[in-house]
Amino acid sequence: MTLPPPIRVGDVVIDPPLVLAPMSGISDLAMRRLCREGGAGLVCNEFVSGVALFYGNERTQEYLRFDEIERPVSCQIFGADPDKLAIAARLVEEAGADILDLNLGCAVPKVTKTGAGACLLRTPAAVGRLVRAMVAAVSLPVTVKVRLGWDNGCRNAAAIARIAVAEGAQLVAVHGRTATQGYRGEADWAAIGEIVAAVPEVPVVGNGDVRSGPDAAALLAASGAAGVMIGRGAEGDPGIFGRVAEYLRTGHEPPPPSAAERLALARRHGDLVVEYRGDERAGREMRKHLAWYSHGLYDATTFRTDINKAPDWSTMKQLLDAYGARLAEHGAQLTAQAAAVADGAPPVLVEGYTG
Ligand SMILES: Cc1cc2nc3c(=O)[nH]c(=O)nc-3n(C[C@H](O)[C@H](O)[C@H](O)COP(=O)(O)O)c2cc1C
Image: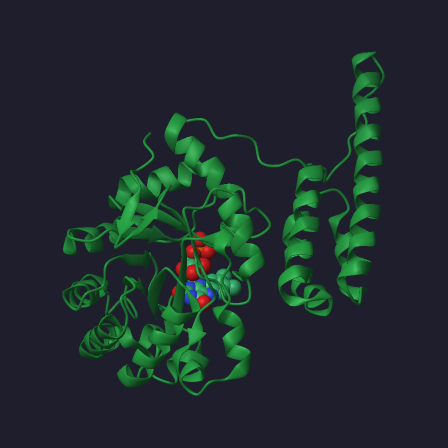
């Protein structure tokens, strides 16, 4: 077991080489900050439309807010027009991102119908033009994130990576599925190795289905990648990066956070969203996060039902406190039962408690 060395991309050092994946609607400032604190060596923002940036869309500017505390941070943009992406790239640089990434993996129709995202995998020459325009526009390192190809008949990520690198891309992240596969099946970690072999001059970061230290070790072993990118595994668990790093260093994965620690993290997460985006926004944003933080805990369904009715973050915090008290009481009951069992009383089985 070895933790790979830090990745260097231009002046940026990714240490440890564990990356929070760009996730639309999820990897906002608060999430990125928590994941940096949780041990990620690089965090990526939610993708930003190059066209919206080009036209000066005000709401889109919000996606270009970065905080010193989260550095290094990568900003991903999507688009299909080299001139517009060049302007967007400059705006990203002015906003203070450390790395500029091009999305070549998003398969949602809203994006692909504009010719952007994963459908660019079917037009390799266009990828070359886009990367060239971005590299010429900024002094930031430019990177790309791809899937294995558009579909099984077109698994051409290695060729795409070669083109992107020839035009100046300095890192390639690969989600080990094709675009038409969506999230079905399993990520093909060995196939990521074909891209590693195709562009030996730049680091390749492997991505897909990593939820633990052993997963990360298996991805690295199967692919030879220089680092690991984690997306869904960080939902409700921003500390996963530190645990994965520890596993890769020592072969031992620290235990996941306890129920009380998870609720404390959830509280801090919501407070950070308030700090960055206000109370009303936090109310909307935190529903999904609270569902993830409480996943698998005792009586989480009741908690989530209550949360879904809460109008704002202040109310959610009260519900969090009440839920925390309920969990503590339940934990005390379990301890009492365990003591009684040790004393010879018949065991009482309580299902659904994993805290
Ligand atoms: C809700 C959600 C939003 C995503 N948004 C983006 C995005 O904006 N840009 C991108 O390149 N990938 C995006 N992805 C894909 C992830 O970056 C990642 O490649 C994928 O989830 C596989 O990694 P995982 O198994 O660790 O989650 C998104 C994934 C999810 C689940």
